[in-house]
Structure formats: C-alpha cells, structure tokens
Image (cartoon, rainbow, N blue to C red; front, side):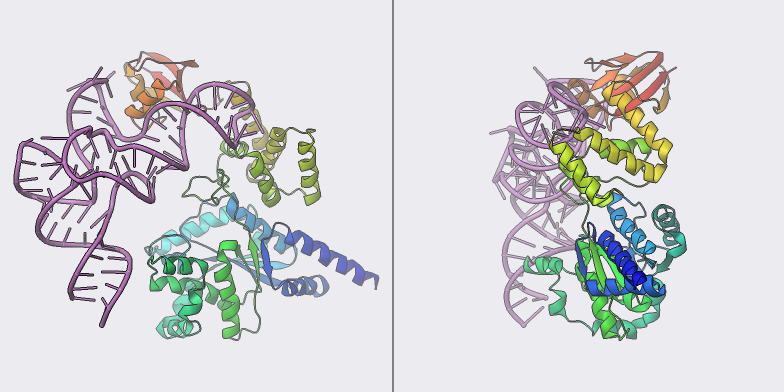
Length: 408
RNA sequence: GGUGAGAUACUCAAGUGGCCAACGAGGGCAGACUGUAAAUCUGCUGGUUUUUACCUUCGAAGGUUCGAAUCCUUCUCUCACCA
C-alpha cells in the first residue's frame, strides 16, 4: 500500500515537471498511462520528434523541445529522433519555402552527424534512436503513397490554418505540400510512436500522426505534446536562423552571453520559464524580488546567461564570458581576444575597416565615420580621409565590433 | 486554351518621360540616454578615395527618345476570372 502511494507521488511529480511550459497536451490520459507503466512495470515507450535535415544549426528555440524530450528520457522514454530526409525535399508548408532540392546522401549524413553532436549535449545518447524517414517512405512505392493519400481529403487538409489562409487569400498551394503532413504522420505509423512532440505550429501535422495511426490500425494512438515557440532576441518573432534573432548552441561563449543579456527584461522571464533548470517556485521568487526592487534585473539576466553558457560550454567558459563582458561593457575596456589583421603600406581608414571585416563597403565605412561610430585606438575619429601609417591600431565600429590591425 | 491585372531596394509599398539612387512604413545599423535592457529622440540605410561627383540598379532582352522605373516590342514568372 505504501509503495503504491509513493509511486503515485512519483508519477504526479513527473507529470508536473513534464507539463511545465508546455503549450498543450492532447490525450494527457495516455501520457499518464505511459508514465504509470514505466514507474510500475519498468516498461519504456517511444517519444518521437522530427527534424529537418537541411539546418543542422540548433538554436535555443530547438532546445526547448529537446530539454523536454530529455526529461521524458528520465521518465522511461526512448527518443525517436527523426531526420526528415525525405520530407525535407518538400519543405514544411509553414514556411514559404518552395519545393527544395533533394539533398544527396552524403550531405544528409553529414548533417545528421552534426545534429548528433549538438543534440547529445541535451539528450541521453543511450536512450535515443536516430532514424531517417526516407528509409520507410521509400519503401512505400507509388501504390503505398496513393493509398496514403486516400486516407484524407482536401476539405480537411484545408482546415489547416496555414492552408486555409493561403487558400482564402488566393496564394498558391502546391499539391506536394499536401503530402507533407501525410508523410510526417506516416512516420508515426512506421515507427509506432507513443508520444510525438513538436512546436505549437506543428499541431496539424502532429494530429495527423494520431489520425493515421488509427487509419492504419497501429493499435495505439500517439499522444501529442506541444511546446510553445521561443521568441527570438527581438522578442517578437519566433527564434529562427533566417531572421538572425537566434542564439545557437554552438555560438561562442562570449557571443552567447552577450546575446542573452541583450534580450529585454520582459523576454527574460519567458526564457527563464522555457530554458532554465530552476524550479517554477524559484523563478517566481526571483520575479517577486525584482518587482520589489530587491534584485536588479540585470543581475537576474546575467544568472540566466551564465546558466545557458555553462550548459553548452562548461563552467569555466561561462565565468570567463561574464568577466569578458564586464570588461568591455562595464569598464569600457577592450576585449582580450580580437581578430588580427595585417596590411601593407599606409592604408585608407575606410578600406582598412572593410579589409578587417568590420564594414561591408567603404561607403558604409564613410557613413559610420560621419556618424561618429568609428574609433581608432579608443578615440572617435571624424576624418574620412585618414591614413593609417605603419604601426599597430585597434579599430572599433559601434559598440561591439573590434579588430586589431598591423600596418607594415 | 481565352481574357484581364501585375513584377520597384531586406520586406511591404509610392512613383506612369527629366526635379529619381527612387516618397512612405517596417526592419537593420549608428549616435544620445541606459543596465550593450525596454521606451524615447536623432541620423543613416546600392557602390566607388572624382563623394554638391561618377558608376550600377525598378522581372529579362531589345527599341523609341537629347533623356526611360515610367512609352513600344518580345520573353519569363505570378495572380484573378472564364474553360
């Protein structure tokens, strides 16, 4: 009897952690059942998530999902990490991407490898299967594919928000795009997943997996766990590489730290909720203290930045990133590590800035000089015609672009 | 297949013969203020050491003209309506 109560408590605790930050769970009962089976009988289950093979640069937005998957692993899950090498050819219609080129096998494998390196900073490799969806989709053949399409109809397909919008506004929808949700759903049939995870924007596709598992008589229907999309550094759009508002997990410690500190105070709490390993209570207490003026928001932000840098680069790197940051910004000193360049003879300042990669063109350099944005050896300059004679210089554009230049 | 509309810079979007490197908005960059925050204000936002100049750019290629984003021809693509 006692053991039972204890188990029940464990399950409830696990569920509570799992539900943290989650946007929506479909079929929560099933999730509870799976947890119960694990804690009582030690049975494991499959948690699926699909990733695009084209962009192996993971950013913090992805890690929201990955961290949740890692949590599931602690609760008995085997993660099925699916690389959508087949579906990647179509491109998920959520973006406005056109049909993509087929990636060759080598590239896909290379990307997969790079995924592994990044993903296993969060996931437990022993409890992770990496799967390629072409391996079962290719086996479908035209007959199988045709069969797949008969399971669904256009009217329901158009229920998908994105399709509906485009249909109503007369934007084009390619037939192949209809295939994307079907194939993603079919993945769930092929690998018999118990839970599929994805961002809220994936709802339609995730539900498709559930629907198709029923249509194909898999014998179970996957539960769906949806994570919110993390806002990018601008605090408005979702974090994405193409918008340039991201923090990549492979970003340099100093960059990572700087980027974290550049987010707004409001956004910081969002990041805390979705990325920090602190408990909800701890976060709430921080929030209270900041509100009451007991803590400076900047310090709270720094702590979060430290935690993130630590996670991907280790303790030492985090500490030195913080020190470096303070050096440059609080004490207005130069960074300890600058890119170094060498040029010959006397050089025109604008040209030097371009050659050191601080400016994109001499015209841009001129504009910035005019705007008082350029410093040489820590002194703002205003002379656009300035020549750098033989010697060593420290060039700076704006607040954060530095280079060391040696003219010989 | 027929008819009509359209394609302008990172995005949206004005401009229908010279005043156009091209209004405006968003975004971005920089300066001031700060905590490299937010908010706010200001400037910039094709290239070039001829910088009150020159060169390239308004879907592509030709043409008319002293002069074309703007007019004409052909082509490419997109959308709508009809079939």
